[in-house]
Image (cartoon, rainbow, N blue to C red; front, side, top):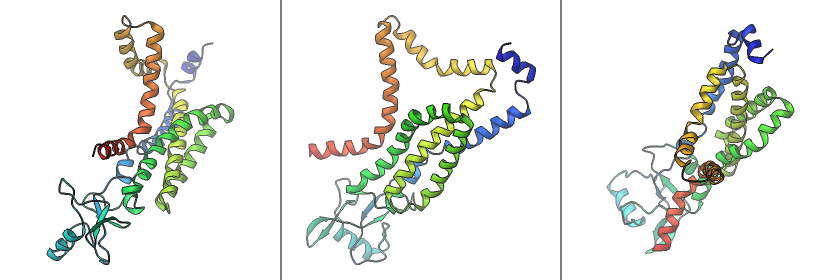
Length: 269
């Protein structure tokens, strides 16, 4: 007897299957916040050097005396903004090691808490990149592991460890600890997502499964049809594979594009 015929006799989508789908999909909803949350947790503040000896210094101007002190201490950039990394001392421009941050948008982020600015700005980009790097490593390690220990056990382990990583993240003592926890968040997050998807897939009817595969393959199908008469099959397959690989690599290098622009500007100047 065919597997689909057995499902029809037992019930394709009964109460048990619906509960299983709900329990599998609910954690994935929270898992979806892992990527976009970087825009807020690692969001950038405007900042400038803290005025030495002024304990209550803030980025926002407090009064006219404060504004005068800022103008005599903080150099201005060509666009009129404060220099974020240098301070004027004895008529000499020097780099500083303490900053005040604009709190009009973000009250506090990883950048302001761990001072990941100026020469250390790369550390914030590392924290963003490692989350997606965790995806890459997870796909290579956790998916094959599921065949050895079972999908459900793998999903439970990944969900538990992802939960622990996210609970510990707000208590990070430095940006290195935060970066490592972001890696494990992505690593175990993708592992759980994949296992939950595969578990739920077993209860989806053939019609819905085929519809999903059709929609997912639509983009590839359009490219194949368009390039079918332009390139040989081998070349077309290689190019599509490289494009898919490039999309993954793109998510890893995107956090560094800002720094690449700065390097080009500095070299030109």
